[in-house]
Image 1 (cartoon, rainbow, N blue to C red):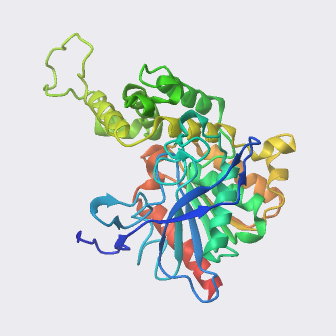
Image 2: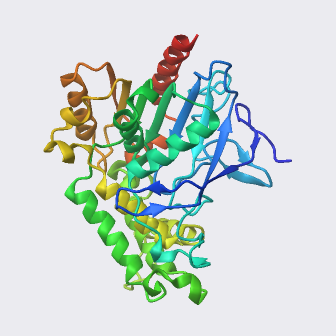
Image 3: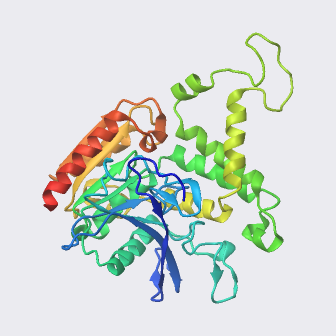
Length: 384
């Protein structure tokens, strides 16, 4: 039995549900006989009104909090946010984390066996969108007996899903909490995603996405993709503070090696992150999820008018951004806020002065956590 830290939800085990009714996707394709893996924390109250859905970002999963049985080091990706006494308090709320379709952490995705062929889907797995994920999540909510979520919450790509919930299922969400998110990707963000995808696709071990059949993994491509992504998650201030121009194994003032191997600490750090990522993440999943990011643009169907896109939303909103986040800058969150105000929607906006960049939404910043704790206390009072 692993040691349980104070405030942890403890040891958790993922659950799995199979859906036999086909899911119609935005691309026009259908996904039949698929599974979703999920975890829950806390207890659903008798009136089924205290459920909170937590939507995950690119490389996360259903494992939001606690530790997995048999894996004591595998702490949930938002464990500092979810648990007894934490901002999203599991003594008050029933929290649901779902692994999205196309992922490599248990739900049906490219690594799964295609029932039509008996082989792994690989590149034949259909392209999915944020909206497809939300429709799948709504089906799981039906299975769990949840007609309406007290809140749908997420950071980054998870925040996009939370926004999509308010337009696709407005009657099923009371509060939307979108953190470090955006109503659509900028050209620069799409460009970063494309460079990462090309690193994977041009890896000789990719084999057109059928690398499973060859018993290999396009590790070099995944490593470069992760290094590119990681650069965008950190602020310049954090990089300067943590690494600066420090040299690996060299004192300040010593000469250079005049070569192309690791010489600076930042290079070592990025290579380590890339190598670690390539051992557990699926290349086809990376392609799918970054493309889902690219496609998200709820205003596109309304001539680019975000206010019109959000006009059907009835939820109350909490929107937060971080001053040093240049991937999804505060200006993008303010776009969401202005669109909501144009519709006279209730919205709380927090622009948090934090040095960490985009990754700040995952960290234990006191001001940030205090704001969310206060907001969830309000949600809890409404339920009572």
